[in-house]
Length: 161
Image 1: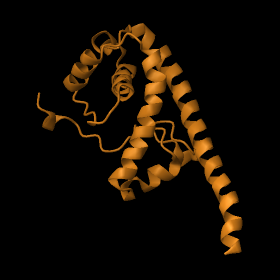
Image 2 (image 1 turned 90 degrees about the horizontal axis):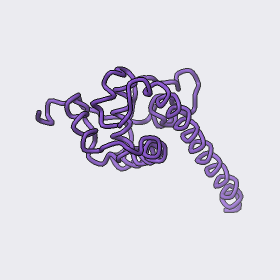
Image 3 (image 1 turned 90 degrees about the vertical axis):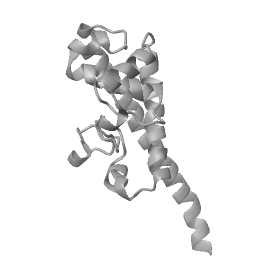
């Protein structure tokens, strides 16, 4: 199957946005609320920076959780299911897409390349979501603490000028 017939993915959106309910970090894609709001105004470099942070988080969580996954089979599975994975996507991102498909259709687990059974999917998905949201929230908290620290440090300098 050619790549041009696959469904395009142009944002990290998972279609389950929780920022509309007041969350600072989306429970679906794990972007910060301001990143979701301003996504279409960001430059390609800014978008890639966000993709890299999100992919790094997926790598930290999913690679250890799915140590026996066969990446070649995972990629074949994603292509068969017409999931477009961006060229720069990491192993964790690819595992995420395969696991997400299995979460919706646990009977796909055997063919996914993740080396898990259908009866394991729900527990793995729930643990993944718990871990990834904790990591994303910590990333958000750290970013704002850092920004506040810079503001606190720079404000007196600006006021002196």
